[in-house]
Structure formats: structure tokens, C-alpha cells
Length: 547
Image (tube, helix red, strand yellow):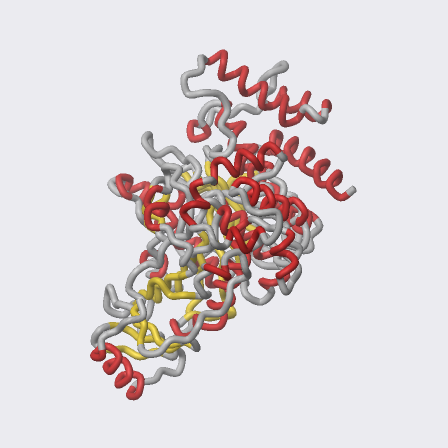
């Protein structure tokens, strides 16, 4: 990627000498737009007249060799003009089926971002939307285009007058393990938060460089889905992101997603000790040894590593490193100590990805038994809440809260969705609405083949409907969602001409927007009874954690 033809370098130099713009440090050559960064010049493409795209732009040094399991380091400068024509490689990850595309292309050298500029050359500053992909913090990439993800191509969103940025960040073993030796060598005396630090480094790069692409560094919206959504809420609450983000959109993810708990710094360090044991590291200088092992060999033991973690009650995911994440993020939001950023929180009608209840071939009786067992397991610690939950899900007397609304599916999916995403989105809306303007949505659109499961809204947000594009009603929902999302990025208010009114969320009305096939409608008190029982349990768990 560092070898360039003399003609390209000469063309870029001549154009840079001849042209300058008041709002963008950019030049336009016959081969494509050029932007001069502090680290060097890059050249993108113009897929359509008046717009520009730059792909595979490095925002940190490759985290390889001695930089494996270290904080992201600033990009080293280069000479000449660097082509920014192709996506950078996804970060290292195990192929688990849905992420086959990203896993096949994965590399440790993966800290790249991509930019879609709606206007070239820019005549005014544009709001910026920074996208964080999902994948359980173990898979996925800015590429998308694999399994559950559509291509994360920002062209459609950018056409609404925003600059769109998509980023990679370290995953799994490479992004979220700590170790006592890593903590000792860290200038911040912290370890394990490398994926989160990558995300913050990307935001810092955007802040420092996005004006060169026509973006406004003072008007940045961080948006993400699933783990990307959960991480976005964590990043927004981090003291390290102060001034880097002005608004946020959280699609199906929160600090409490799937009832997970961020592990303590000691637990994060223990994860690294477990990895050292799995890979048969020596008793001392374990990290030095682990840095010599090829990345593919480390990924190959991920299942064995995850099993070993589970035996110790640990998991491979974001934890508190004591630096980027100094305290439990859910408690930050509950206490109203997060930054006062306008926020959107939402979930999908069948958002039950992390709460699979029963087996595919279960009889109706077996499925109900699995639902009851899940209710008993989840609320069993609190007999008073358990009694109410059993009634709410139809297991004791009349008056259950099991819905007949078709997009919600049967009771096992309703329960799984409540526990996995829906109630968390509602709780986050309630907490944050006391701090800053807050909007809640539920996505219920789709068809028989594409019910509103986890990730279903991605096609609509990115304007890539695939085989749903033949349905005018769904095309309209997608267009409206893109308008809401980009209006919000520009002003902090999703409303605008021609759109159904989206009311702010507040504790009194608990209003939200329902996005469905038959139109967009204002609703109130989403799943209020079961989510109220969920919220009481969560508050007790948070209180216990503080003791």
C-alpha cells in the first residue's frame, strides 16, 4: 500500500500547489480527490459527480508485534500520495458462520476507517456520523456484507447531506483481554480495553481530520448496532471521549445487553492469565511469549479459551480497564452522570439474538416449559418479582402481558427480546431522558422472510433493502428512517418536514416511535409491565454491585 507510481505523485503535487479551499484542505486531480492530512496525503474516488469516498484510511499504527495488546499509537507519516481506494482488512476473528466474509479477510493490521463525503469540494460544514459495527465484540467489521450484515456502504446516508465514517476496532482476544504484565507496562496502569481505545482513537482522528473532508468536528454522532451500540454507550460515558461526540444513536445494544456485567479490572487481567495457560506460556514474561505467537494460532484456540473462561465465571467481552472504562457504565447512566448528549435508543420487535429459549424442534409444551424455566432462572433470586413475572408471561392466572401483535412472534421470542434488548432500550431511554433530549423507537417492519429480528433494521438504515426493495411500503420506511437518523445527526432532533412526529421520551408519557409496515406511529409505554419487572431486578442487581 506504500508503493505509488510517479505519475500519481506528480499529479497530486501539481494539483495541491494550484488549488485550495476555505473549508476543506483538499485538492482534486483527474484521478480522484486528494486530502492532505498531518500524516500525509490520501487520494480517494468520486463514484458520482459532487461526492467523494476514501477507504482504508489508517487512524492508528498496525497493532502488531510489540504493539499487540497496547494502546493504539498515532499513525506514522508517509511521503507521496497514499491511495484510499479499498477497505482495510477486518480485525482478527474466528469464523462462526455469520461473519465468514470478515473472518476470511481478517488481519491484525486492521485499524482503518472509511469516509463518504456528500459534497466535493465542500462548500459548507456537514454533520458527521461515525458507525460502529456489531458482532459481539468478537466478529464483524466496517465491511459488513456478510451473514446478517448488509454492506456498510455510507453512500445512501451521505446523500442526505452528512459525512459518514465507518471504523474497525480490535476484537475478541486481541481487543479485550488484560494481564498483570500488560497493566504493569501500561503508562495508564490499565489493560484490556484495547477495542474501546481503538474506537476512541478513531473518534480523535475524526475530530482532528474530518474538516478536510467537509465534516464538522464539533457535530459528530456516534451510532452503532448490537455490540457496536453497547460499545457506543460505553464510549460516550468514558472520560476519554469528552468533546469527541455530540450525539448518539444506540440500535439494539446497551451497557446491560443480555444482562451482561462489565468485569472488574482484576477479572480482565485474569482473562489474560487464562489465555497464557491455554497457549502454554512460561511462568514469567508471558506477554512477551504471547506476542511471538502468530495471530492465526491465537484465533485457533478461541473456543478452548472461551470454555476455560466460562469455568471461571468470566467472558470474552468488554470489561472495566480502569482507564477508558473506570466504572460500571450502567451505573453511570442510572446515576445521571453521563454527558448530556441527545440520544436515540431502540430495539427490534424480535430482538432476541442473545436469549435463545428452547430448541427448534420443541413441541408447544416443551417450548412453554423452556419459557417458564427461563423466567424462573432469571427472576428466581427475587421471589416477589418471580411471582409477577410468571403472571406477566402467562403462567399464573389471567391477565398476562403476552402480546398478539404479529411482529412480536410467540411468547418465547417475546421473553427473549425483553431480556436481550427491548427492556434495556426502554430503561436507557428513561435514565437518559432526565439528562438530555432522548428518543426511543421500536423497529417492527419486514416481511415473512425478514421478520424484525436482531440486525433487521440495518438494511433500512443503510438503504440496502436487497430482496425487500420490491415492497413500496418498506422502501418508504427505509427512506423515513434515513431521514430521521440524518436529521438527528444534524440538529439533535430527528423530526423534519414530511415525517410523522417523533415525540421526545419522558418518564410521564414514555412515548416512542413504532416503525412498521403499515406506517410510522407514535406509541407509549413499550412493554411497560414486563419491562417494569425487569427494571426492578436490574436496580436490585446494581444496588448489590455497589456494596
